[in-house]
Length: 458
View 1 (tube, rainbow, N blue to C red):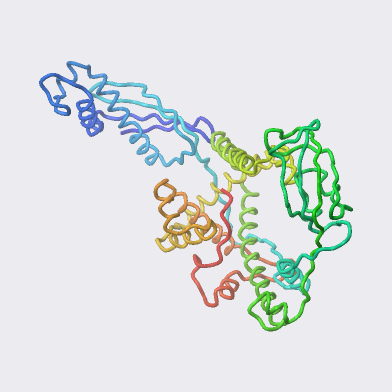
View 2 (cartoon, rainbow, N blue to C red):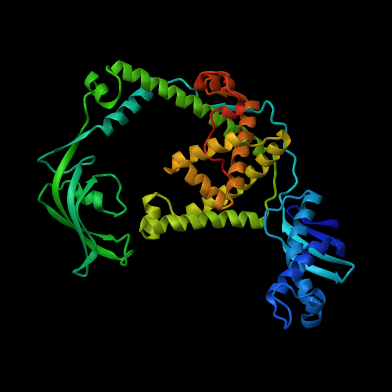
């Protein structure tokens, strides 16, 4: 087999592949067997029709077509390996010549990963947040813990921001009650920011036993987007009461006997989290610094596929929410145009990140051990709330184990970048990532056991 490569653009090539007929023999033998199983010829059992009879009765073209259908995809894969290109899209294949008994020729146009050089990443300077834990950091965590153990107490006064009300809701359009837009005994925190515009403003100042209506646009159901009258009937008003910060609270909220012990534990956990943040920031910023030095042309098909995947996920989220599109974006305080603009920027960066990390994976000869794959599946299963063996089976059944391994080695490539960088914090102090690994794990560990960041953006 002989393969010639023509560069159509920095991200697209045309392969011209010439194949001697002898190399088609295995596919041709398989084609005869397949055709023999499909045809019925008097005097021959299914699958036992000789090749010469098949050609006499049905023509050689039938066999050649079946042969090429089997052989060309395999030959394309071999050609790609021989010329060392990295396809990122499905190829457009055309058989351009068939010299029966001599050779065939086909062309394949395909988008590829562009050629580029990765700059030296040793000593790249990055700045990360300081890991010092302040009293304010501890107070924030304590307040969050108090919120979790807060109690609701009924009050005989109008509702204010932060109060909880129990209410009945119904909607009417032109005086007609909308059956699916009714809800009873709904508990809601005033000021939480409902997708039902006007609800918070209407609730403030209402007392138990009062009823009020306001006009708003419905956000779900068959009447989504239509203006309606929403009637609120407040059943009760309750205020949130936070527990006192004392030893009794420490015993209630933790395994500690005293508030001081609880504070010490929170401080230690906060420091650990800040150290892990330093590792993640170092890796991300080292990668960003590298990306800033490289101009990488992007294949249109790959960029479109990434954008389409993100749009599909967004449509799925909106459908699952049960909200109208307008209400959904209002809930997240953005617009559809802003989200799509983010997708465009994010998709381009995701492709560049993947291209660069794959180059580093190859240069550093990074691989995935069986234990690393197992650890990945266990961590991801915990995040998803499923059993590890169920997730492993799902990945295997859907041919996603390769994607999992790509994710693992790209994570390792980001670790290489972070470890090679010169890292300082915002206070000007040098940050030793290996010392952080030791402190977090309690002992010196191998690089692959260092704190791993979240799923890479690619």
